[in-house]
Image (cartoon, rainbow, N blue to C red; front, side, top):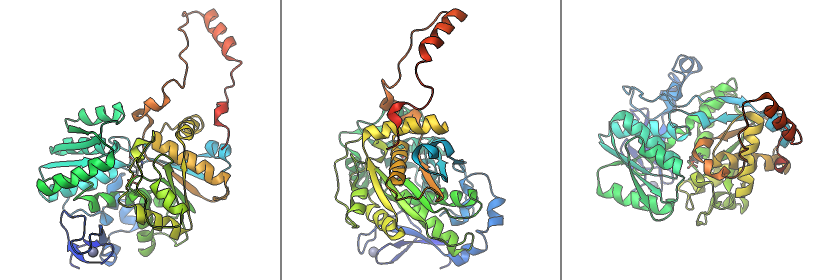
Length: 423
Ligand SMILES: *Cc1c(COP(=O)(O)O)cnc(C)c1O
Ligand SMILES: [Zn+2]
């Protein structure tokens, strides 16, 4: 190989060089970027990384972009935070949150994948880009394309949260609402990508897009002082993120940046759209597509492209997958906010509720170093909390009114809401 990376078929291994393509011509399996790790060895070192920018591009030696590429979007390098108060509540003594609720520029981990996809869209000469999206990807593509001056078509299910629609349109993107769910949007996107010479970040640019998710794993290892955790808990939609965190860890091990140790991967879904967690529970790679029905719309992919690989990765690691109800999701959003000061969207509620259940069921030992991946921001899904908090009457600006107010409220406990008792 003369370049640092190429595209390979995940099943038959056929090489496709570097081009905008995501499916093997021969066997119709997905393509994946494969790095020449010997080539990367001299460039992807702890020292080189520490001298890089404080964003995801510090790992560019293992991201599929040309050496000459100049990053335009400083996404990533989000906080890895200890979570002792959440931990005390759910029986965890060594719990961390990877907080992509504050990933820039659009407040979800999708900014990472889009940064890599759009770098490639430009390199391939596309002047128009697009995606099918459950919301966060739409926001990230719209913002990224605006910054690069690319035209944008974004296909979303018509029932998307209003904040995610606004957060797409504000960047000047053309939003196409589709009567149907994500899987309908995605199928149409494939047809459009065949017809027009456009770059679709999760269709013909998908292999490049997917590599951006590795930066979550690189950051977790670096932020832990160049070591791997015992466990990762990760939300799943298409199933890409969880497999790419695992790929990042194995690349770090192969290049000697961290000591090898077993890491268990735990997948999290909403019960209303749980094809991957069902496959894990049935001990199979075969995904039975579902019709999504959950408030966790960012995870509502009924026929997940990377589902078989996610199920395989979870089971091979010795991990597990769980799914939780919409009621549990809302409680977990409140629980994370009240204990750690992190306001996440519904997908983060899924991760938090599943994490609690994994401890409750003894699948994770309290002392194991566990990282729960919070992937999106609560300000985008405020509709799920509608009616959750009462609005008191305004009081007059008088001390006596305030004292009466305190008197009235002192009966309610300042501790966690009773609804939030451990699962
Ligand atoms: C897209 C998304 C995911 C899941 O990503 P996949 O790689 O498709 O599994 C998780 N959380 C949020 C907030 C997302 O937007
Ligand atoms: Zn093939």
